[in-house]
Image (cartoon, rainbow, N blue to C red):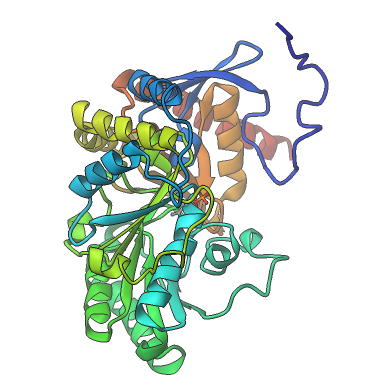
Amino acid sequence: MHRFDFSGDTTAAISSAWGRLLKTPVVRGNGSWVHDIEGRSYLDFTSGIGVTATGHCHPAVVQAVQQQASELLFGQMNCMLPDKTVEYSRALRDVTPEPIETFFFSNSGSEAIEGAVKLAKVATGRPNVIAFQGGFHGRTAMAMALTSSKGIYREGYQPLPSGVFFSSFPHALGDQRESEVAIENSLADLERLLKTQSMPSETAAMLIEPVLGEGGYLPVPPGFLRGLREICDRTGILLIVDEIQSGFARSGSMWAHEPSGIQPDILVMAKGIASGLPMSAIGASKDLMSRWRPGSHGGTYGGGSPLAMAAALATLNVIHDENLIENANREGAYLSACLRDALSCSPHQTDVRGPGLMIGVEFNNETGPDQGFVSALQHECLDRGLMLLTCGIGSNVIRWIPPVNVVRKDIDTALDIFECSINSVMERKDSAMLSA
Ligand SMILES: Cc1ncc(COP(=O)(O)O)c(C=O)c1O
């Protein structure tokens, strides 16, 4: 068999668009671990930005994909209806909230956001969409136009599609998180926007992540979601909930918006949906979905592949059979408590937050976001074998997003590495200050 020679610059033929945490090529993954070509193992607490919900290569997912590959690799949705798509759409209907009961499948989160906005526009006959500051919804043109979590996602690409308006996010830290004042102020901003910039009669939808992802792992206060629902009910604007990162048990509920008690008009799902195969879904009521006339939306691969459907079905079974909602709650509470404990004597002002296994740890110093410290900490963790991502407008939030089936032993290993890394970065900082 031909063996590839990995010496030299391994990225020479790969686009520079990808910034990368782990530089050496990875050859294998199992559970919360990945292994590189040099034989090093890393605890992957990025889950590929929330994709490998059931860990790397869960045996049930692998088996389902292998079986499907031998039966039907592809069935184009305008030409035929793969049986796995029928089976999965019914299984998904069983776990989505009322009134979500019909689905359009596609391949990526951005593609599903684009589709959700198209559906909202065609269903209401209205042109505009409102998004919230700090949100991330993807990188295709409309998804980019709806994104405001960092300048890099938009810079150089403007002007972007029009008809997008941003309203404020009720941003508050620590004890202030559920603050009625923050919620009321942001709802008042939204009402003002609807009176001054995009009238309800011109507004098709509002789009919100129930937990800001790229924007800093900030949960939306349930009272704010309820306020949005009330405004939407009053004005006929559709409420689109982007659960692309927070869905499928990640938050300790099947859907992160659940605890608020609201019902979305359109639910957008991706990432953890199929444990690593590219897939996304737009869910809506039958009535709303039927406003999409045949042919008015689609795509060669729109429909998702039977392989992804098989992986998604296996993923739902694993979530159910292995009690992953319970695991996310129990292990998330443990991880959050240990992180608070570990940071109790930190010279930084820290905030540990987020539902289930979607935990953000924010670091601020006396002048504000400490991006330098967080970046040094992230790389120290990597050197010691722990992969973690950052997020937040100030890039000063470490995000903890391990597989939803992560086991206690791996969490403890990660916490040990994290604490040692903090000490080591602090020591380096202290000795640099001494020698300065
Ligand atoms: C909340 C949210 N929406 C949309 C997207 C875009 O998904 P994709 O990268 O699959 O296009 C992401 C990706 O990180 C996301 O986190």
